[in-house]
Structure formats: structure tokens, C-alpha cells
Image (tube, rainbow, N blue to C red):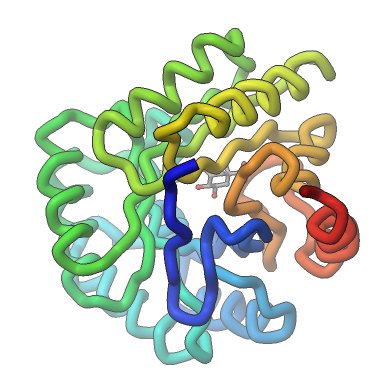
Amino acid sequence: MTKAPIQIKDKVLGGGTPLITMPFVGKTLEALKEECQTALEHQPDLVEWRADYFEGIGEPAKALEGLNTLNDSLGGIPILFTLRSASEGGAQALEETTRQAVIEAVVQTGLVSLVDIEAASPQSLIEPIRDLTRNHGVALILSNHDFKATPEPEDMLNRLLKAQALGADIVKLAVMPQSREDVLNLMLASVRYNDLPDATHAVTISMSGDGLITRLAAAFSHSVITFCAGKGVSAPGQVPADEMRGPMGLLARHLK
Ligand SMILES: O=C1C[C@@](O)(C(=O)O)C[C@@H](O)[C@@H]1O
């Protein structure tokens, strides 16, 4: 495998132990501050700011206010910035140009370590953001979501490959299982992707209770980030960081 681990402040992404990531879904500065408190108590490896939940996020100045609050209150925990589009589960609908302006303003601050955008975004949004993240040393996640079903394994593999071809540092797929077989298929697609000689880092998730095993066994399916619950959750199936550490550590110690 050719991919080099990515250093994110004092954390190593892709070094064998998946990074536990706590999503923040606060609507106000006060709510974000409370989420920072939760993060300080439970020490996830990363925090994901799901900025689509934040009121007024469409104004870059408001976004920077939120970001500065996080940066001041997180004691150095690295930040993944996600302004999820409404079409892939985002909490509010924004014009594509507005979304782009906010993401660009945030990347330029140098205060975020990773950014997640949807692989299905128009090329006119992906390319400039990809160039900007490269220039600022920010890791780019290109993501895919299906909140209803789990595509066929071949289709899932193709989605990961498409995200890679678009220039992702990390490719991501989150899908909803309708059966236990779907959960296994997601893991199979993830393992097959990682077995490709030029694969990059991947994050693969089967959501809901049935898919929880994919969060706990992220190391097994070569998924480099696993999302936990914080003060709230951003997707079904997330559980508290403290409960994940035991099973995750056990796996990490025994996997080849
Ligand atoms: O896309 C993802 C994955 C996720 O949907 C999950 O299932 O844990 C949670 C989201 O916050 C994140 O942006």
C-alpha cells in the first residue's frame, strides 16, 4: 500500500488506529461552547464541526465567529469542518456559491485541519476547494452518503474510486443498512478498496444500530476515522467515545 499516514497536529491519520471524531451540532455559540466542554471531558482525537447546524452559517463572518469560538475552547483538538449540503443530509439548504464562500473563508484561516465536501458536488466547487486545501495543508475528504439504503458492493467501490479520482486525500462513504448483509457488504467494499495498490485513506460507515460494528471495527475494514456521539449525534448509530475505546483498542492490539 502506497499511502502515507497524514499528520494532523499530534494525531496520525492512517496509522492503524482510527481517529475517534466527535461531531458538534450546536445551533448557537452557547451550544458550541457546551460541546467544547464535552469534548474536553472525553478527549476525542478530532472534532467535526457540522456547521450546517449553526444558525447564520451562510455569512462568512458568522462562520468565522463560530470557528474562533471552537479554536479558543478546544485546547488544540484538531477540527474537521463540514458544511453538509442539504441533498446529502445537511441541516439547512444554502446556495452552492454561498457554501463555497464559507468553506473557502474557513480554510483560509488555517484553523481547520480537515474539510469534508460531497464528492457529488459540482466540479466548479470541488476544484477550487481542492486547490485551496492543498495550499493550506488541509486534508480534503470527499464524501458520499445514502441515508436510505446500501448500494451494491461494486457501486460502493466505484463511489470510493470516483472520490479518489476527484483528488480526495481521504474518500468517505456512509450508507444505511437494510439488513446485516448490507453491513457486511459495506465492510467488503471498504476492504476491497483498501486492497487496491493505489488506494488512498478511506472512511466507511454503515449507519444505525446494525451498522455499529463498522464504527467499532473501523480498524478491521481500514476506515481511518470513526464518528462517536458527543453532546448530540449527527447520524444514527453513533455511541459515546468512552464506550468505543475498549473494543477499538482490543482490535487494534490484535489486528495484523
Ligand atoms: O458523513 C459523516 C458520517 C456520519 O454521517 C456518520 O454516520 O457518522 C456523521 C457525519 O457527521 C459525518 O459528516
